[in-house]
Length: 169
Image 1 (cartoon, rainbow, N blue to C red):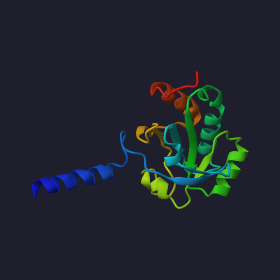
Image 2: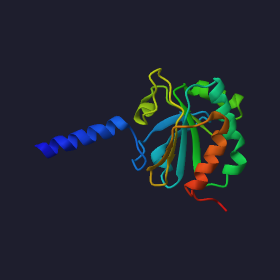
Image 3: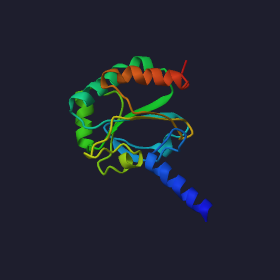
Image 4: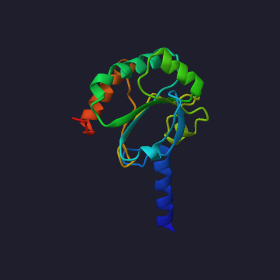
């Protein structure tokens, strides 16, 4: 009985901590700013990066979007799929992507289920600015909780290099 209690306590503690590096990434199916629907399970076999952000058309989120957009030339050599994601509806994210010339899809999670599953939902109802790096097997290989909007593109490049994500060259 004591062992069962210890196991339950351990499981409860891990759940309270949220997702960790080494955990399987929760699957999702979300609509995106490019008019497509993406499902994480269908992207298995390639690295996936999901950069959650609080709200479209706000200062920091606009700066982050442009920083990642402007890093495209440096990061395009890597074999990975990149998304930004927020709890905004798809219409808002589509307009945001268009205004900022985003060269990547922006996922919409208006029912907040994916944000909750990833533990990024803040008390105000918006997503925290956290980026999840998911390996080709669907396992979380890095969680960046200190994303700087101004240097988000450079951080993305540095993380792809450090994690030795395969390149096309």
